[in-house]
Each structure stands twice: as structure tokens, then as C-alpha cells.
Image (cartoon, rainbow, N blue to C red; front, side):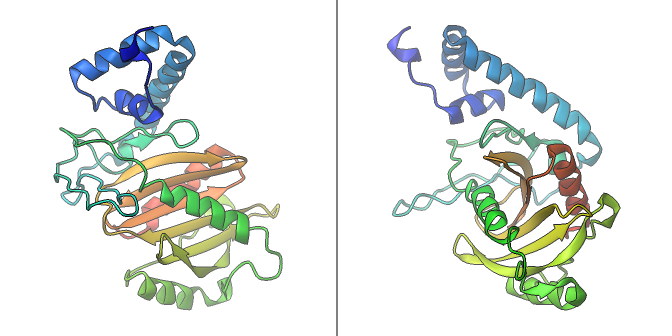
Length: 262
């Protein structure tokens, strides 16, 4: 193995899958994959999953003028990241980001600046933490119960500056609203809605505001037994988290996407 091919990060592999690399860098990655069959098999699986998911959500593949490049938050102490605003070739749910622990299948853009993934990963990490903390609570899992749903939507919508915020109705999927709460997400006010099915299985839907995120995309993340489907729509991030089947969690995410304001 040459020195040139020794170092390939997971972010670079995702960029390769997303077709975001220049020709020379793609060639280097391909040479590295040829020398690392296990990683090559993983990349092949990502590509196949990406094709299947894009076909599944093709019906929602509608362009939006507001869809622009995601601008992630720089590390603490770093200078402000400057990014070019670019039109998305296919926005909304049609581009679904999936991978391993924090998999990424990025939006299909005309071009993109240097890949930076750290900021957006805050959303699934905080969603997973919130689920683990609150979903296991028996007596006080929420601040405002389902019997005050209208107040819950108004209160959290005001704190998130989303006046038309609605609490998703998931009864068609077998989940009843337990209630919701205000919680901090990346240092800003966030909203958490909790649901429960007939067997007592719970899931959470989290909403967070981050004005630096300027795109619509879908991703999947897993942390132990907890799975999260999440997406960024304009300045709002959404995450659906639970310890239920991924197929059911995906259905919930799709239903929430239909109901949330855009």
C-alpha cells in the first residue's frame, strides 16, 4: 500500500459515495478501496441502500427555492465558516442520507465546498440523549400532557419562533401523544414530543433551531439500540428517535415530515 493511499477517513468515504470529490481524489479513494475489501464492501452497501431509499422517497422529490447548501457550525474557537449558496439538484426527501453509525448520503449538489460534518451531528446525538433521559421516565416524562395539546403547540412554537407549529398526529401508525417539553438543543430552545404505542413502546420527536443549517436532507444515525431519523428543513432540524424497528421509525419520520410546516 502506498503512503498516498494509507489515510482515508469515513467522511471521505461518504463524500465518495455522494460523488462530491474531484477526479484525482476519487481515483485515490478507489485505489484505497481496492486494497481494503472490507471497506469496499461497506461502500457498495451504502450505494445500494442509497439507490433503494431514493427510489422509496421519489414521490417527495420536489425542488424548493429555499433549499441551499448546509452550513455547519465551526468548532469552538474556530473562525466563521464561509460557504457558497448553491441550488439543490433534488431536494426534500428524495435525497436520504444513510450509513453506519453516523451515515451520510449527501444532497446531490452542483458543487460543494470543503466537507464539514461535525456541526450537523449535534442533532442526532442530542435527540438520542433526550430519548434515553425522558422516555424511561414513568411519572414525569413530559412537562405538558396530551390533554393540553393546543397549549403545548402554542408554547413550544413561541419558544422556537415557529408560530404555526403543530404537534404531529401519529395515531394512524399506532402511537398516541404522551405530551411534550421544552429542552435545550445545542444551546438553544428545542421542543420534544413523546409518543407511546399500545405495548408501551415510546418514541420522541425533537425540533431544534439552527440558523446556520440551510438545506433539506434526510439522514440516519444509530447509537447502541437507539435509532434516529433526522433532517434539516430551512432553519429547523427534526429528529425522530426510538428503540423500535427502523421500518416503523422511518414511517413515523415520513409522517412527521408531511405534517410539519415548511
